[in-house]
Image (tube, rainbow over all chains, first blue to last red; front, side, top):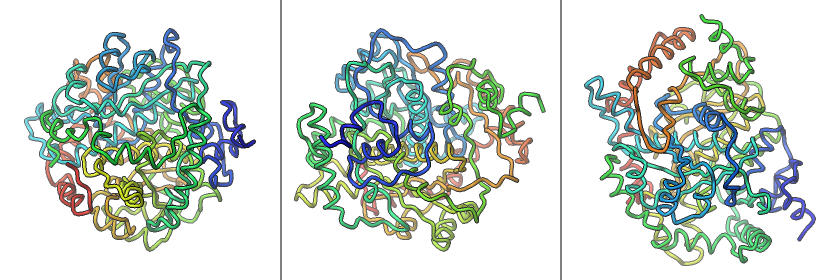
Length: 285
Length: 285
């Protein structure tokens, strides 16, 4: 392990240079720029999948996380999102089964399920006797998904700033109708993803996961991907090293992409999403 | 103006109780919970639409914002997003015309256009000679939209922590094909929204905008909207007061919702999004 990687592997690596190096797996990290506690919190994110099941969140934490979520931007202030906070162990267990049977959903004391919620606007229209012409369009679904994502990310940032750990659960989309039934969602409301929240198990090391180099995601003026194949090859090597260090085999990025998106099986049933959402009331025109 | 509203109206309101009261327009704000500088930054968000056009961002700021964006969670680490940083005044002006002709897009020194980018995965498949079976599905589009939104929200939080102002630009979806042409996006890549970034004009007051009460967006165990109509009526009154204070007439929430989503005209052309995206290469099956 290089000295840089070793520094990055500790949870206490706090310098911006270390955090940037860890974030990019030492593949062309940018020079340290302006920084503060907020930026350190953001750069230091890692998904937590091992929680202390018996350590509850302090009183007022849930409300604070949701107030942070409410503070995110929302398109035209329409606020087309909701969140369902699930703490009941039996409901968490049932939702875990629906979401690829992931153990951490049961372990974490709090499961936040983020909803693209067009139903509230539908009810506003009903109360005024006005048909909501814009709702049955793909655009309205995008509004709900974006609103839910911006809100959730604020909640996650707030949680991590408090020493809590979080992990997003995209598998909440594997069986949208069953999740909706469990949460008693009205028509025109869909669980976009879950977020498990709790105190990280201090005995399980987590590490900042390297991302694609800045040169591949940040484009100047127009889109361009010069030397993309070479940059991906170096990223593959960095991610394989990360995987080895963390007991996850030596999986690089490219093989992971190919198995996840290259085959229909990798969608875990989500190829049915369009028809399921239509049955749930979304127009998606 | 109430004492609470007056306190909230100043940019220096820093106590969590004041921030929560402002965020909920004094409609049932939650009791102050745990707090720190990160949470204060999140609660204190307001969209900025008046920028100092001649004050550039400090060196290294853009890279720091994008490193924060890269640090957000991404589904299965697929990283189906990109961002195009636009600083050229003529390109900003052209994009402004495409996005409802909003002046702040020209004024702000930096425009970040956030891309749901499935094209990178497509290229990975091409390089390996593998057809990417999962790409032409609505699920893949959702992956890209969520990834772009989580990344953007981290960048916005980082920017605001540095004293910069931001505003999301959903109108970047009004003419997706024209925006894609301007940014030279490849097929299977779409501008989900823009974010203008710059120093706020100190002569233009901005104020935390009240959101729907916590009781309407936060559901416990299952979805429920008890007393929703009454809560919306109180929120309508709070938002009308906010609008009056800020010289925006006395528009409440309900009329805004009805004009924005109640009529097809309120979609500003986005009712065509599905067919335009199909022409841009998205399967959306």
